[in-house]
Amino acid sequence: MDRCFYKALNGPAFGLVLLMAGTGPLRAEPGVLSATITPANTRIGFTINGIGWPQTRGVFDAFKGRLRVDFAHPAKSFVSVDIRAASVDAGGASITSYIKSSAMLDVAQHPAMNFRSTSVRRTSAHSVALTGLLSFFGATHPVTFTVRVLSKPGQRPLAFVATGAIQRSAFGFISGQPLISDTARITIASRGRGL
Image 1 (spheres, rainbow, N blue to C red):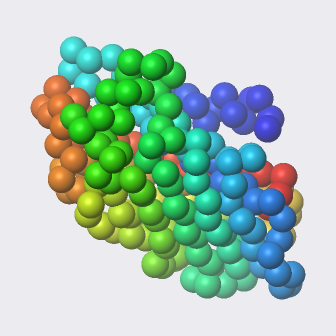
Image 2 (tube, rainbow, N blue to C red):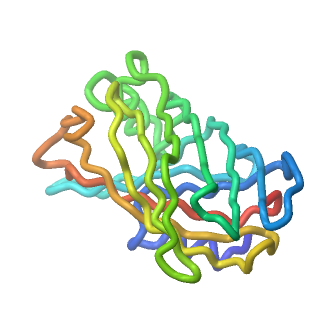
């Protein structure tokens, strides 16, 4: 992973970081890239702010998924990701244990997070609006990302940056409010060798 690219993705402007990359194409189609999503060259993380509370960042280390990008017909593109909530790591044993506990994510009761795209709409020559259903903390709601494609059609590695946000309260995840922010910024970014 290019260090400058990685550093830019982890800057303060980005929240939840998801670097999607594949292990290789699943099926060869002209103008289409299909791949599996694995932890080998993928990073899933988050950032959340608070009042009188330090900014918290973390990553998820266990997940799998699929990605299909149709450059000529973006509406036919899709992504799906399954994340194991207990794989969260906030960089320290105490804060990680707290996030996993029933006071926060309650990973024993809510072991999985899932995202399934439902629509992709081209917004410019190099960007799309990606909407999908996020299942989290026992609830499912639509989330929309603005995706900026950095690669040329068919170019490898595929590189893109997507940004969006979720309201925790929409999913019933209100732990720590109002001191801990209700808004979680999300970024999905990819520059993977397998894509």
